[in-house]
Image (cartoon, rainbow, N blue to C red; front, top):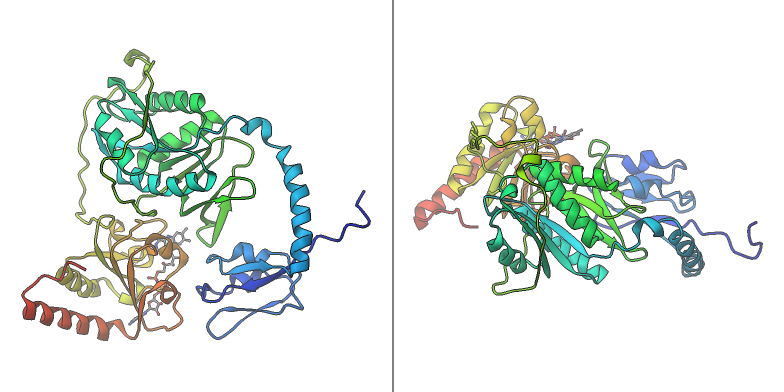
Length: 440
Ligand SMILES: Cc1cc2nc3c(=O)[nH]c(=O)nc-3n(C[C@H](O)[C@H](O)[C@H](O)COP(=O)(O)OP(=O)(O)OC[C@H]3O[C@@H](n4cnc5c(N)ncnc54)[C@H](O)[C@@H]3O)c2cc1C
């Protein structure tokens, strides 16, 4: 029975976090059942507190995390009391399943012929933040044949410990032996969290490991953090076709597993001379027991020479380019800047650009020093693929285009006037200085 003297749990009110709205349309307004949200001329939410019933729907659906709940000081005190009781109750549920999984934060190091994929080091950078928040060790899990040189690299990128399984059977990636090796290590040392790169190999392995361990796996995360109340990993990723950002928890199973695409997280600086603990384990599956045999390694032939993921500068075009021929303008500018040409999905769907050039949720994730978005509106599915770029310039004739919310420099105007003028200026400057402008 409810305690008669206990005050009701406060629901709070929604509040807009100034400057965070990306003017996505009317997502928050549509979610509100009480008509408490209107949009101002900039497309930002205006909340009528008297009408808000604290249902949190708007906070949950906002793709930009621009809404939050707020409580008066008295309400906060009541919530704290509730919090203590709820945490005590919640602890009862998963304890059995998660007990003993305290082996720290692990990052799987993906390598091919002894060369590590850079996503592994990016994940060590992110893993360090999680390990710090949890006050646990950060470890790298390394499988392969003759991979000792990578141990030092893992320490240099921040690992406190490296778990190694080195065996000729692991020379090339195959699901069965890699799964076997990973399961042995994970079951023995019980990490709390395992992070894997969302590459072809990583997706294959992480799915298999999570299935065998009967734990949760959140794919393609764009954000990772720790909930300090309960030490859970908060795994954020686009959901429902990218229309909302969902934060997913693995409450009742361990380890908590996430994959993250390359270039989503920043790669930490390499620290020369770092060392740590090495834990070497034998591999106990012989070649005869493995169903898949590698007969030949054939390097992938690609029609496209575009390298968006590694580009320092990207000049990208969207539906505002109005046709395939106008991408020549972007090619000209890109040529002068030493840049690659990217595009939105609309331009790809229209057949103006090949898919290899697409940036975004279903294209490439990029993080160049400079991203120039031309005639791109800034849909959330595009933004998740480029918003970590160091400097973003957006050219759009619509001053309310959401791309301006992530741009460091916004130019409102017709790209067919602006880009030729920029090309002319860059060309003049190059002629004057006799230098390439490739270095930003
Ligand atoms: C599951 C799913 C996955 C998706 N994945 C991706 C993805 O990976 N990448 C991606 O990009 N999209 C993706 N999308 C599509 C996304 O939702 C948008 O539809 C798309 O990004 C819009 O492309 P755009 O900005 O080029 O076109 P529009 O939204 O049509 O915008 C064109 C812009 O050009 C401007 N413009 C027009 N003429 C000019 C001019 N002369 N000068 C200056 N500006 C001009 C307009 O003001 C407008 O802002 C995905 C959608 C879904 C549902």
